[in-house]
Length: 367
Image (cartoon, rainbow, N blue to C red; front, side, top):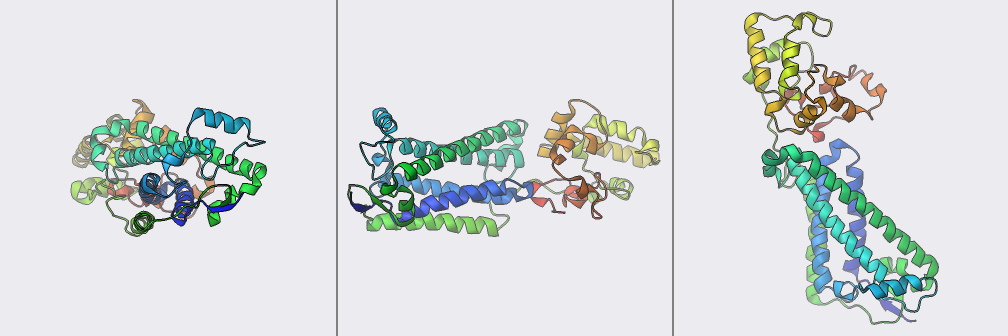
């Protein structure tokens, strides 16, 4: 066996940037308030993936898709001779070739469905124009996105297991080390970069990094910007602000359905233990406003999911609804006892935009 140059610098940079972006996207998905960062990283990952597809067509030897051995008989032979290999591969072995194709395809589908879910469910990003027409199916797009993300983790596990087994069984090949220095101990010819390939690599890798910096540093850029409109309730209905907002959080009418608002406004003399009775004029004005702008009239995620969770029940305590309990179940009790929060009903302690008619994941304040 001789030492040859297999993985050129652009291929190695793609590999490790691919790893970092997937890891970053996963970390950013752990907190709702990091949703914009998750979308920004996903956008950069999409550009990097496009580069890898182009690289797989015009790149150097071993990095091209044409160098991937996808013959079923080759996979069978590789697996049967795993402990006593009859052949050593300079590039991807047959099993790794299938896993790499599957990973790239799955990442592509995860990105596409992620952009769809981001636009349809959150009314944000490039596909926000689809929100109004498809908002009722928002869960469906989100679930498909999660399916491909989970599939990706399975493929990543298979890839890591393959690399580790190769490290143990075929240590002399230097497969793992080759992703750092580019060299393997196998028979074959050296990979060589041409001038045009270097330009393509510079555009692909550099463009990915530039887009990542741009999307993370410019909050309202077209790739991650939100289009839910804030509401000035003082102008829309002064009585609603003066009578309701003076005692507690000004809950958006879009948070509850009409049946709930009718029930709540029908018994203000016993309003959660207090007498919140209004004069007839204010009562009529506020009730009409609440009914006209109830959850039924909204396409926002909070309204749709609240309606789905209530299933025609006329609950009036927002913190007792299945939707609220489900979305807050992982928050420690100590948070609600915090001096800043004090009560589960104090939504504005965490949701800085709730009194403007929207509840954006990205506007959640850490306590």
